[in-house]
Each structure stands twice: as C-alpha cells, then as structure tokens.
Image (cartoon, rainbow, N blue to C red; front, top):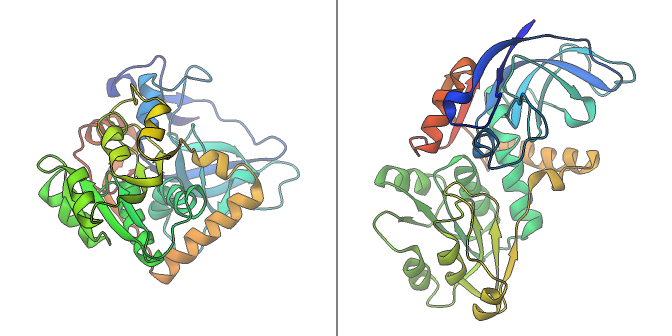
Length: 324
C-alpha cells in the first residue's frame, strides 16, 4: 500500500483526500517510480474544480514529478531500478508511488535536484515550446508576458533575455514586480495600479508587441489583443482568472490581422523524440546558468489542499513543490 491524494468529486481544495491505495507491479512497458517531489500547477486546480473534464473517478491530479525508479516491467530498457527520473503528464502525480509508461520518463542529470526537476518538467518545457515553436522569438522582438512572477513567468523572463528579446511583464504587487525584474524582464507593470496596455504603447512607441504570452485569461485577454502590433500573435496558454468569454474571430481582423493560438504542452511532447529534444534543451540551459530555477514554496504532499489555496489566492511566487 501507498498513499495518494484522491478526488471523489469536483470541488474546492477541501475535496482532496489523503488515502491508502493498492500497489501493483509494473506491466509491460511500465515503470514503478517512488516519487520524491511533485510540482504544483494551475492545471491541477482546473481538474480539481471540474473546469477540465475528468477522464475517470476517483481522480488523482498532478502534472509533474520526480523520483527514483523502483522496478520496471517487461521490455523496458530505457531506465533501470535506481535511476533518477522526472516526467510531466496531465494527471496522476499527487501520490507516493506511480506507475507510468517508460516512454514518458526522462533521466535526470546529476546537476538537477529532484525538487527542481519536479517544478521544471511542466513549467520549463512549457517555456521551451512557447518561445521556440509556438512563436520562435528572435533578438529584438517585443514580448508581453502575464503573470511574470509565477512559475512559468520567472523561467520565461530569463529565457527571453537569453534570446535577446525586449520583455514586458505584468505582476500583482510591488514585491512581485521586483521579483520579475530580477529574473530578466526589462519592464514590469503592477497590473493592480497601472494599465499594461498603456505601458506597451510607451515602450513600443505605439507599434505594439510581436507576441503576448497570456496564462491569465479572463482578466487580461482583451488588453492582450490591444497590446499587439499588426499581424502580432496572441498566445493563450492558461486561464488562472477564469475562461475567456466574448472573444470572436472578427476581433483579430479589427486588431490588424492578428493571430491567436491556444497551445498545450502535451501536443508538443507527444512523440518520444520531441520530448527528449525539448528536455535536453531545457536541461542544457539550466546547466549553463542561462536559466535558473528555484523552489519558492514547499508543502508536504499530504497538505496539497493548503498549496492549492495559496496558489489560487495568488499568495505564491515562482514554483511550489509538494515534498513526498
């Protein structure tokens, strides 16, 4: 037996229940991982609340984790017992022990701790695909990033600086503004006090941004569209303030032949080769120091509800981890 955080029905953080679950041996192609650290992300709250449809019940949320290979099923040759590994999948991480397909695991370099790995597999790979593939950022591009002091935002500020972009971030307090500046942003707007659309106009002399990365959704999407240059790209990859409502394709024409995309990480790492290549790029940037990652909040896995409350109330900065 081991422990897992189960959900019997959608609800608030109090719906999470720490319970015993039966263990089994890995089947063909599977690996049993004894987990040591689990990342906390808004996607976990979307599934918990029922905003995202459940594929099964009871449900275990959690999209990224790290640990040690305990045993392997038949035909598994990519990892062996004792290997340190990490993964990102949409669901299933809030547990002490995990069975997972071997082709979803990446082996960890010695230079990356389990806690860091558990917070960069989803967030770091998200930054990697957004700035290299969804929109390939070039030196001199002007980029607007919402939630610049969040887990993805802090990584993105550093990555964009390394790419030579001009960056504008938004954050929700003076402390978060300073944190974002310390992680590479050229300009940071406290959205509780100032209008980020006006700041973009000033910074770009009225031209607008080349691309906006928006993980906030409801509260920011209209301003994001107004912040773009003609033929700029609106990248909506989250909805921490709620779903976008009232959007129409005609708005893209009115804004100057804008583009809009709603990408998801798991469509960019579906193939094993692509997962390995993107993870290798991420790990190389971390090893070189071009991008640094840190855990800013720690909670026991059994206290996942507390972590959700902190995340949803915007009381966190950067990455949070559940320690197993």
